[in-house]
Image (cartoon, rainbow, N blue to C red; front, side, top):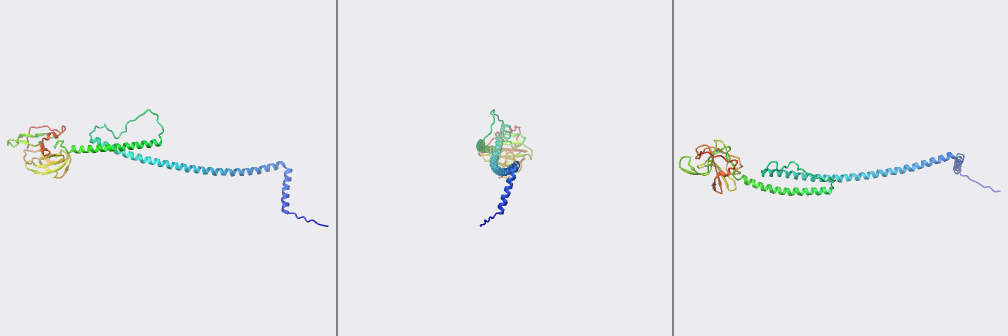
Length: 314
């Protein structure tokens, strides 16, 4: 007689018994079992969907961050271009201000009529064409052209200024005004009767009526070459204008400049008086051209031409 030993696994039996009971329970309640299975499947699907949604959200955030970086880079590049254009605009404005100032000086130096050239206002413009957006390349080309025009105009105006300055210096060095304000001529240039009754003489200058102490003014720019007492002339000032002209102012009561002084047209050089060979207070004015005495009358100018009175002072 033989015996067969059978050993059962308690855990396997437990699992088998549990699954069996579930299967049996499912057979008895099929509708409830189906609902439970659907619920479990839905939970599994929701979990998978949530995972996909989280992955999509992370990708979207990364894409937004990348786009923001690109926009920031574009903004920085645009700002750099704007700063460069602003710098060029500042340079052009500085050149325009320089040209305007230079033009005003030339207008004044050239004695142009007021309003003939207005360097402050903006000239009128117009056009029937429809406006359009201007490309950046076209704007840069326009700025380049304006800069070239400014440079060329600046060079031309500088040359004109230099020429006008030279002409002005030359003009200011030519006697062209009366040495006394609000006066008249008491004795003309040339042959005349001696004021002391000693016959005739050649008068080398023009005598202007003046009171003692009246200002005697330089008739042009120059350098004082003599300021002292000269025989027959009394206290005398002589001015060398550097272009062959020398002017002489005599019979003064006092001198206010000394030899070597630089004087400008209209500047006071002496006080009128009656020193030297003179019959009374007046201003004796002479003009020498290249070492030869000439008639000062032609240098007085039409606006400063003084009337002649029948008097002789010396």
